[in-house]
Image (cartoon, rainbow, N blue to C red; front, side):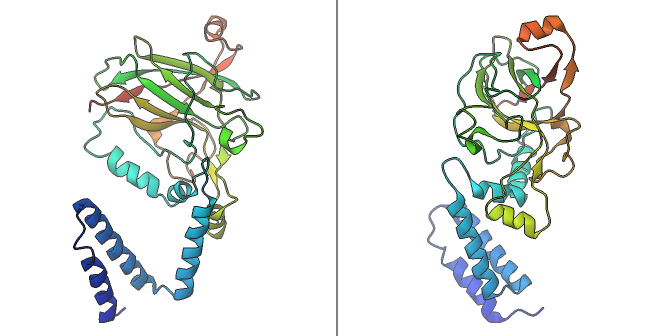
Length: 291
């Protein structure tokens, strides 16, 4: 394909217009964006009608955003961009081997998790299979991190987050902010998560249907772990054996984050955790590297 000289002239002029940008990183980002967008338009021979449709799609995406729904994050997720950015930084040399792997934040970390005591139940509506999640917050050398903070959020047993069903679920359902004990331990009660579809009633759903893609995510629980003098990590645990582990709609599954939710028949342990026996038990350590 030949390139008209006027095509490249427009690109060069747009890049030159950034010469007065005081922030060098902003200039670098915008220069790259302009060059790649212009190259995309040339490569695909983008038509005026197609560009207008794209603008309409992005406009509708913005209009779908609310205080409790972020359609642009959802769009970034289904295009694989969220996971790419996370992979570039989460798996780079600044994250040492042995630390817990990171993955996407997702679109539902839209409200603060309520502070809860260790052992509290974050499943406020019931109906799911009882489960205990326990583990430790550790430095990469195995040293416990007492006072580590663990932010947790998940969908209910039917696959919905509290912000999706404010008329059904109380605020904070499926969410908790826990502080690790003196030995770095944490534990909480919940229900076993289930696979669920990401919201498809907006532009992102239209995109998935147009490209014959399913909207499902495998069963998982979200975590953000923080501790003093350590690098925070945003991650999930995925339920081993869940559907869609090999076709996550947002490309976020890493083998090291797939965990067994083991069926446990231990009356004394059930009494200790305050759950019926038998129950499911997932053990997951959050390993942070020093900052």
